[in-house]
Length: 305
Image 1 (cartoon, rainbow, N blue to C red):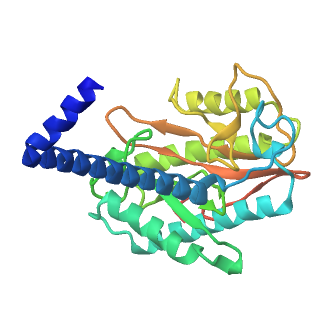
Image 2: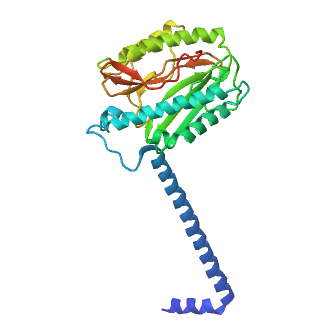
Image 3: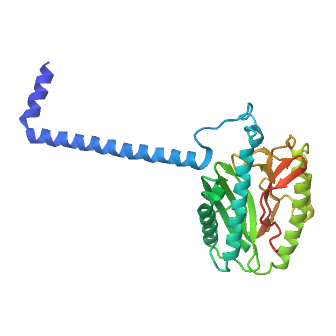
């Protein structure tokens, strides 16, 4: 009690000092609460944007999905495949828009912006079926082509490919595609590489059917790339699942296991790259069905046509 009385008398002995102290504490507390509220608001907005753009507020899967994720373990509803078809259609429209508007000397980032903006503009409400559509791209051209580096400001090169890694999300379902554009006439060295990769690509697509080995799919793609003169390439996966994610199981690897099953959607993506920059990759999404498979994107892999 003595200490309380002494403290109380000390507060009122110097009222100005006490008032300034109370004001300082109050302002500091108010500022702390304000900044905490802003931080909480930013966090809630980031979570909300991520949920709206990607997974949604609720996901329902078949038993065993978390042990072996993949579109074949989600509920087998026709509308899921329809979303992926729509996403692939939008990707093709975005690439056609870029092909019509690309010019040598344009920045790779400008090509990326044209594709992403066009898909977003036409994708919302597309065919009165799509509520949310977004595209994400990585773009490189000529000697700037590499394996998964950020889009930069290097210029589009005439007579050489501009490679577009394009992911489109339509209402939570994705594509994973690699498409190419060539302003001008494709140079002979790229013609040779393209023809080799087309042969490997078509062979892999013909092999990818129900009951086929995932390990053998990886093995035959990489063997074909080695025979084309690029042993040990590429460093990235050459086949994997696509669906509720742009990259999801199953992963084809020659040291792995598993078989291709009906209802899977597989991305097949052989690629080969040159030391110092440049190279090529082809990638499409294939729905495994009773007849083998169906290629979901209409944009041509032989981009000379």
